Image (cartoon, rainbow, N blue to C red; front, side, top):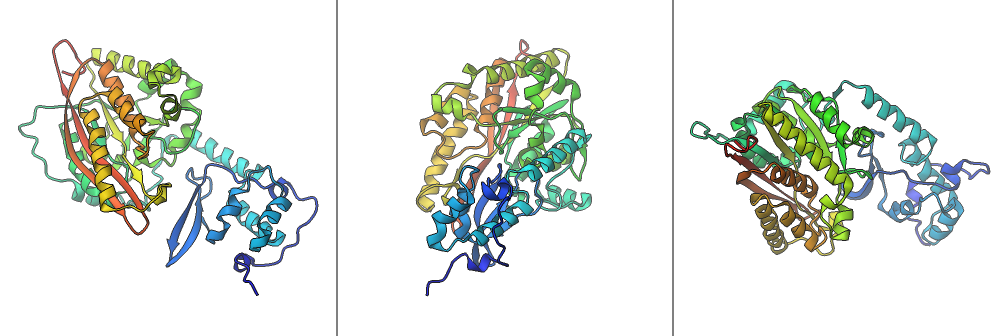
Length: 438
């Protein structure tokens, strides 16, 4: 007798009842969700998590539910889904149990989820600060413990003879466990900086139809709070468009690309004001093989940002960029075919060096051409951010001197997952005619 692979999941036989709402009659999984296979206690599990924090707890399911979940599209009826997987043992009772568990975790696109989403967005909108979302998980929540850890990461760096000033510091946003050596190598360079305000900019990992996301909140870490430069943010929003600047401000709530910079920034440059910006995807530009400046949304934002920096510079203020960006994301964990190998990682390193050379040359078009050459096959998540930074630096009209301080690859061959990242310092090479670079 064949064993039903779904049977262990069913805790109780719940009958299918007529008149159930659309959650059960035409079930639709909501979005965004992070759905991956993880190894839990030696067994594979399908783990579903909410990346934007509406649902606090993840849900672990048997991997055989993966193809069923794909069919929860709000178009097919439950009867159709059951019929499709009946040969594999799916029954109405098992599907109902699955939907119930998904709904309990607010993973279904229904009124219950949308009400919870509105409450979360409203709470974030009214909060005076962007509170740390990763404290107690990705890093210690204790101020003293975190400070000791960060100081322990920072590598000695003699700045006594240095006369250079940071125009942009590029740091990773990978977790500290894998990236601590890179963080520790690059952040001491920030002690050279004389900036009055940092444009804290990084990858928006969650989808939005918009590209740029401002946040008008102070950014808090267990070590300290960095006030938002409200005047800068307000000016930028007014010139770019207030509605589209803040429509998805909520994406800042749990985004790690900026948060992971804060403990290091607090350790090296405490209390300095920040302008928080998240940058989304340039997939439309890559597909069309057209530079971002040909899009109104990009050109308006880049132009407004450049002009405000120029105005601040004329008033004697120093502005610098702090970019939280990673590079390649490769392996079967990210959808690639074929297993990772040392040879494959050497190929990735070669391509990464080409990417870094474009940054060293401060050549935003070369950066775009490099990524477009293979339609971002390496999934370089920091590319949109770095394109904008290089473009703005070029619009400001100066030159930079660049030190690639560190490059690393975090490779996990058993899970077939690799992420690459670098620490880069871009210094101002000034002339008397160009105040920003002097």
